[in-house]
Image (cartoon, rainbow, N blue to C red; front, side, top):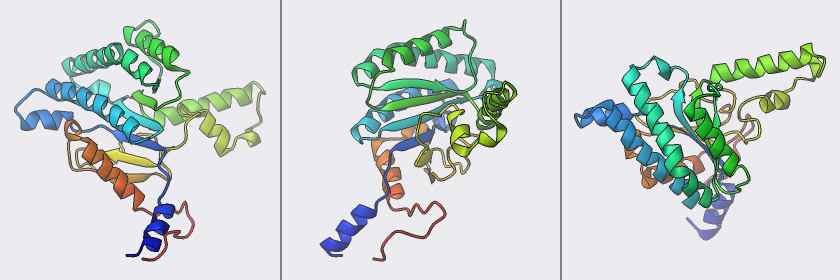
Length: 250
């Protein structure tokens, strides 16, 4: 292949701004090693730290991590308690490090009890990092895509009832602004680990035109090399948004 073709392909590479990740497989990682599921979750937190650093190194502006779904409350109480403990520990220990790295932290999902320790920790971290202009790190916690859409719909319906807007004024843009991610660009790339091929009620509206990459490794084994592999796959996709293929023939 000549230099001209290489340059053309480089120009046609789709832009990658926002990566969303379903961090799946902590329990299976632990089971393969004869360890309790909680050991997998603990190892998974280490992978979160490494992935945030790798996203910064790879110049990715937006990273959204699916950490705990609204359906996960049905898991055994000891496992849920450990997940809560790890989430609080992560915020307490990493808040200053992320702040120094110019990372902005935010959480999306159904509102937590305002009196809960986790809510207070999250709000403190969000406030502390709100002016940061580096990686925009979003953590989806107590999150469900259908719930988010219902909450946005109720909010718009209330505005119509109060006479603040007319129903005919509701557009895709207005609806998008009512979602938890209203001020974020839609994900360009969704990565799911563990070899499962589904999105599990994650960002149902926002993933409409995202590229999906499913990796056959459990979350604790998601290395920088695996991250780069997913990005390489993304860059070799043709993003048409319903139009015609833009990639030149080889």
